[in-house]
Image 1 (cartoon, one colour):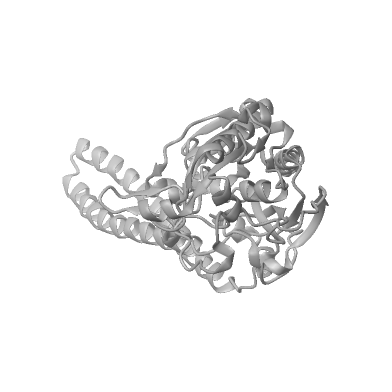
Image 2: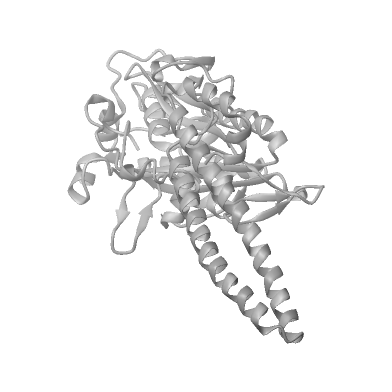
Length: 426
């Protein structure tokens, strides 16, 4: 959530930068400032009247001691009127604060100045491509056919048990999935991320604090009886570990990594782009989260991008990095880099990671601050990234590494799988 004081101080700049999102937020900005003006006036008047009441209370005590009861009673009557006035002012103040919060929840984060213009993912800027695309043999097939051929993933069984988008991993498919999870976790731990295993259900306060609520409420699975949400990403519980926390400067850098299943309704998704592992309602992901000093967050963003790139290079997957344009930028992000891998059998690029800097947008909601050297509390910057989301990694690995003899396993994963090829010949 944007900080109202920064909006007040940088109104025109914020309105201008928000235009890259292809929507005019100037009216909402003005509405927030108008409510803020009412709030400040109410607070000023309330402070004056409370001060006056304190002075009168002292004066009443003095008058009673001096035996001036009539004068004291007159002042007591005045305090009755002041109490009624301060009560109304407190109500006005609360009303303005609620209104400001409701308005600010409708305004997305301010894009970084380097976010390119664009209306949709087609205008995202490819900034780097690495890895070699494989030349597959004649007869190569997409991953859903490989999964059936080698008994790796049972999509139909998932439909029977739950529904579409809930696959069952079996045999070496399950082992490969577990190998990827352990590989990603160990790589993060070797880069000084502390592993956590968070809850898979969160309350509304947690969803609000990281920006999933109210923006993405319809995409989250909700448990009505318990008022809990299934997590769409480990970002939510891991970041909320630090809700209502005040850090010290020497606590930085704060680095956490966690593996969780993730759950997304993906309402409205259909067609060939959701076939197989391309889009699921339940999927596994390893998430990295950093909490940063504001002056260092963009250097940390580059560090996190480099971490994800290294994972893809070690897996030998042809990949590319994109800078998201304003029209494709997430509601809470200032700047996001997406990673895509090339799926040879499908002849398409598949998104496998987003790495984002939220600056103070989340920390303002989280009330997550740090005590600086001058003893003043300041909002931190929060960042997170997928490192990595597994379904499309699995899809690309199966498709790109298929040979006429079977599916070869990247060398880096063999210590985790215990085998170097998947075939029907054991």
